[in-house]
Image 1: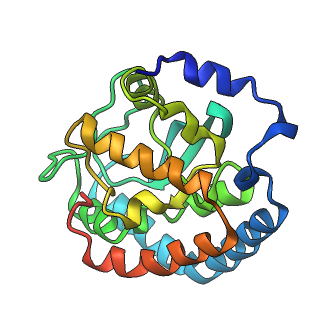
Image 2: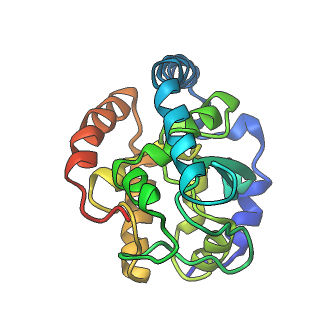
Length: 217
C-alpha cells in the first residue's frame, strides 16, 4: 500500500526531472492553441450557462476548488457550479446518482460535461492539459494515496480535461476503492506510454463517450 508520503515526495520533484508528458513543449503548445480557440468558440455557451445557473439558485456561477496538480501541488480548478453547496474542506463526498445537491441546470451541465469547460482557463494557466489524469479534490488525494498503491504516481502529469481512464469508462462517480484503483491504473498507464498520438486518440474517443456516458452525475 502507498502512504500519504507519496504526495510529499512528488512535491519535491525538480522541474528539470519532469516526465516526458509534463515536459514536452509540443504538447504544451497544442494545449495553449486549442484552449484559446475553444474558449473563443464557446464563450456564448458559457455566458448562457452562467445566466441559467444564477437564475435557478443563489451563489456564484463559477465554482472554485483546490485540487492536486502536477507533482502534487495544489491549484484552483474552475467549473460551472452545478450544486447548491460549495465543498473545499477535509471531507468531500463524490457526486452520486440522484444527488440532492445537484440543481436541475447542474444535472444537464454535468451530463454534457459543459460544467468542465471553464477548465480551459486552467489549461491556459498551465495548471492542466487537455489530456491527462482527472484532478481530484485534495481530501480525496490524501484519502486514496493512503489506500491505493501507485496513487501518487499519477501526479507525474498535468491533470487533464479528459484522459485514458475516462474513455475506458471510469468517468463520474466512484463506488469504492476498486473503481478508483482502476482509474489510477489507467492514469499511470497513460503516463508510462504517452505520445502525442495517444493524446489525439483520447480526444477523438472522448466526444462519443460524452454522448453515451451513463455514469456522469
